[in-house]
Length: 294
Ligand SMILES: Cc1cc2nc3c(=O)[nH]c(=O)nc-3n(C[C@H](O)[C@H](O)[C@H](O)COP(=O)(O)OP(=O)(O)OC[C@H]3O[C@@H](n4cnc5c(N)ncnc54)[C@H](O)[C@@H]3O)c2cc1C
Image (cartoon, rainbow, N blue to C red; front, side, top):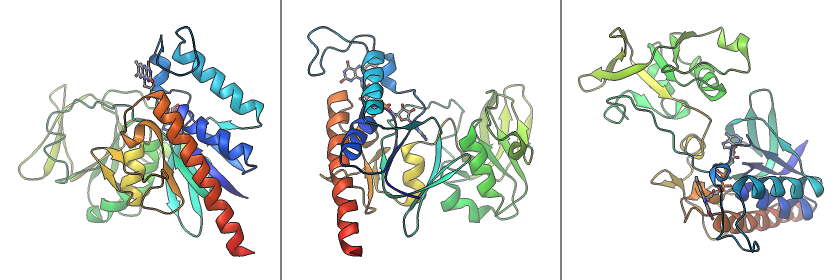
């Protein structure tokens, strides 16, 4: 089955887009982990239509109920990859979904990794993209920095290039859905204090003072983010945000972005507005495709 619209993100941007695509009879699927940053807002008083302050939780639960009333479905699965073939293939841990259009509405949660020299070795052994850089590490000793399904997925991608792969969780407990896949890799759960080397990364130093040599580190910390998708697919970005045009379309036709991940005035009203624009243009894109094939 090919969905008309796959929407990645169940915050204001994603749900707003889905309200449009569903009401236009588009086969729509929404993915979300239910952890919008809006949950943290105890009092919102600058969003249209509420005479009294309203909590972020309340807005989110009303949005979800609104979507469900219209027949929408939110799958609680992390999207870990998007590929474009004849149609888009959206990968989660257990499934791959096909779609004519995709919206990235994953927000922009700050992920802070406090490891000395992480920035220093970016591009010099530290990479954020297995698809782009995995080839450089053929037969080498590599690490994946992360602890969730996204890290496991990246480790599996690297198996095309090397078998010497360790997942470094930096003191986090592993949270892998597919335990048997995790068994293919060495797991190191020690907190990391620094990456060291001369020009390129050469070793990891742990907080307990121990060290391990490494040729490369692939960062896949937390959940797969808009920037991870962008790097892998060649979506244009600016300062960690996705560039979208006035139709909310990225440089890849059929692939849209809305909300905080675009880095434009991170507010609910903007996310909802961009979601609506994306939804409208996803509908037009699918209708144009249908016309072409008539
Ligand atoms: C403390 C705080 C207070 C705020 N107060 C206000 C306010 O008063 N007024 C205002 O206008 N704005 C406020 N904001 C900003 C507002 O919350 C955001 O602008 C808005 O939530 C952005 O919506 P979004 O849909 O782009 O992203 P989010 O709301 O962050 O939603 C993104 C969703 O995508 C899902 N997701 C992410 N990655 C994946 C993946 N790989 N697979 C599947 N799902 C994924 C997440 O589960 C999440 O639910 C506040 C923000 C914070 C942090």
